[in-house]
Length: 194
Length: 316
View 1 (cartoon, each protein chain N blue to C red):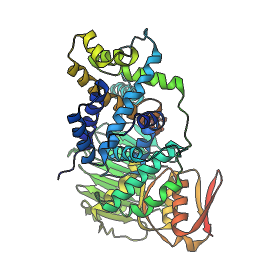
View 2 (cartoon, helix red, strand yellow):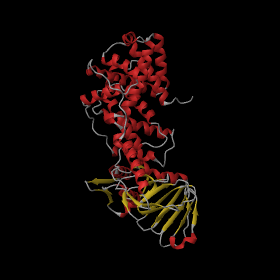
View 3 (tube, one colour):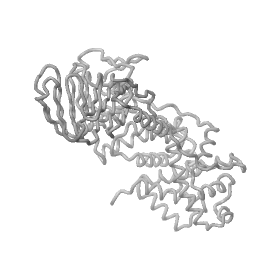
View 4 (tube, rainbow over the protein chains, first blue to last red):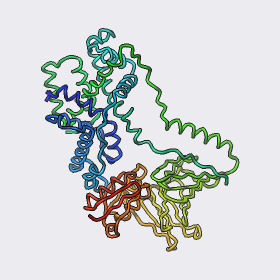
């Protein structure tokens, strides 16, 4: 089980993680009350992890969307949730009807800005740990020595930071769910005298 | 066994990723990790997602040793700023108002707008709608000029909340209901909560009471208003437009298409009437006529042709 390789983790961060925000936005537009989007996301990663090889995947973004979609269909069939009307009939069709955009190469500069912004968004102590671990490239043990903390405390900060980073990547920046949900709110009420 | 929440799995995954980032696992830990990974189908995904996040931060090396993170940026979302200035505007206007003055609100095609009213009530205007609001000391008057509105009315016994549309008047104290003008010049009223009174102004003495989960159609043909019961499911489904979704339950395709066309500039056209008699069930994104047309075409073995202005659904 734990031969889950570093290669796969690298592939995920390069080709999947950047699309997670738009997958979430897409899901929240199409998926219905009663669904936990986080469940779907975790399952989707699981399937990508279980694949024998990913070399045949030419469009990871589309593949990710497809995977999430099939998970939802499966859940509907198992009826873990109660669908409104018979969504499953239509659910089977919807993806074909709305092809996700082709894979977009992640812009290196944007990527770096995103990473910097993610570090800045971390709580103070956690940020210090990440600065040393990731910007300076120290090991956790060296980080602990530098900050005068125990190794297990540093590990806790790293774990805490991972959670925060994932939230950050999932809900902000270029791949934001918010941006694509933005609505026109241009018109102010027109006033009129009675 | 109780299903673990995705949040807890995510936390455990982050702990394991952090542990592995510290040093190679001991044999015992390796066994624990394997057991955990096998405990739920979401675990391997959550674990690798956490590792991916950590790996992604390796890019931070490129920031260089001089990188000095700024304190977390204050998150002034655009919406907050607009809401803030709007509130200020409303407050200063309030002080300025010496006589009642009405306000007109309208929505464009495909736009759904939430409008907080001065009394604490909330009106949600659906696509292509327009309403005039006038609050006086005795009454809260809303005139639905066209389209559809959902009204969540703040309780105020001294000032009834009255929505008028065409030939109908709906009076509420504290409740939630939808009023919609129909192309046939009839008005459709649905009550989601509480009780309202519906009347034609010309026959105000014949007001009819409607409770939650009831619907009435007020046209100029019938002189009696006869509310009918609808299921709570239907009532909720009807309100999905507030989230940008349309739901149909055995609706004729003709009606479903007409509904879609309210929300989009790209018109869907049915090539012949017979197609329109088929039935459609499903939940769709209101602003994606293309997706709807293609789903319909696929499920009914029809074809959907589109250009910039319209989508034609026809037999193969």
